[in-house]
Length: 370
Image 1 (cartoon, helix red, strand yellow):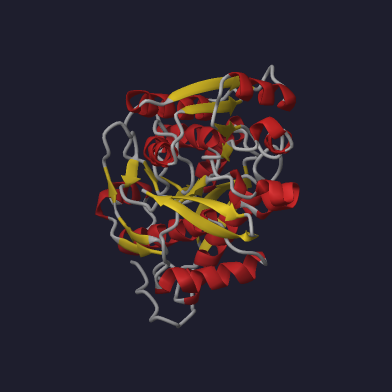
Image 2 (cartoon, rainbow, N blue to C red; image 1 turned 90 degrees about the horizontal axis):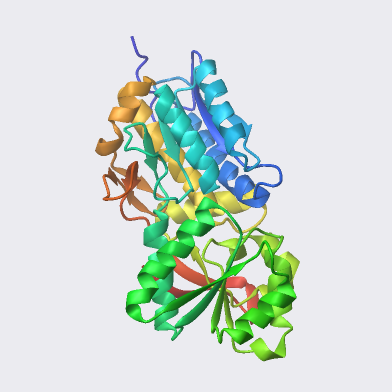
C-alpha cells in the first residue's frame, strides 16, 4: 500500500528511495560544462521534490553515471542502472550517446526521459519507452536556416567532422536551403587546417561558415584563424549546435567568440517558475545557467509528476508519456507523436537563435525565434 503524499513543505520522506539513473558527460572528451549544467538542473529539481515529501513519501535519489561522450559506456550504464533497479533513466547531452542509451532502454523496457539530445532518429524504430524534452534537430536547424536566409546568406560553408550528428545537420541544412536558393559547401575537417579553411571560404565566396565541429578543438583554432584573416572580415561565423552558450567559449576566445549565432532552447521571457529556478541555478553553478540546466530541471519535474501519479512501475511510467501535462521552466510540457520522430516528443519547446553581444560578451542577443 502506498504511503499518502506528505503535505507541501513537510520535507519528510520515509522508506527506501526511488532511484533515478542519470546519464551525464562529466569527463573529456564529453562536453564537461554542458554535463555540469545538466546535472545541476537535475540535482536542484530532486532537492526541491524531496523538500515537499518526495515521491509518495519516499525520497527521490539520483544515481549518476558519467558517459564521457562514449555511446558504449552509456549503453553499459543503462544495463547497470536497470540491474540496480532504478525506476527510470534521464539525461544525456550528446546526441550520438543518447541514441545508444535510448536503444538500450528500449530493448530492456526501461523508461528514458532524454533531456538534451536532438537527433530525430533517437531510436531506429518507434518506441513507447523513450520521451524527449529537447526539440528534434530537424526543427531547430530549420529555424537556424531561416535565420541565415533572413540575414541574406545564400552561400553557406560548413566545417564538419565525421559524426552522425554533424552529417544529419548538414543534410537538414542542404535540404531546407536548396529549394530556397541556398547552397551548402562542405569543408572536411579531417583534411583541412584552420588556415586552409580560410582559403576555401575565399575560393567558394562563402558569406557564412558554420562550425559543425567539437569544442575546444578544432572550433577555437578555426574561429581564431577566420577572425584574423582580413579577406574574411565580412563573413558570419555560426554554431548551430550551441558551442558559444557556455562560459568556457568566452574564456577561450574572448572578443573573437562574440557575434557567433547559435541555437538555444529558452523562451523570450521566463515565467515566475523559470525566474525562480534561474536564481537557484545561478547560485548552484556560480555562473549564469545555460538552457541545458533548465532542461535538466524540467526533466525531473516531469518525471516526478509521473511517478507521483503512477508509482515507480516502469511500464506504467512509459504508458504515461502521452498523458503528461506539466508546467516546466520554459512552458507547458506535453508529449505527442511527431511525424518522422521515433520517440514521444515535447512538441513545442522554445527555440531561439542568439549570439554574444560584441559590446558585452556575457550578454546574449536574441536574433531570431522559431
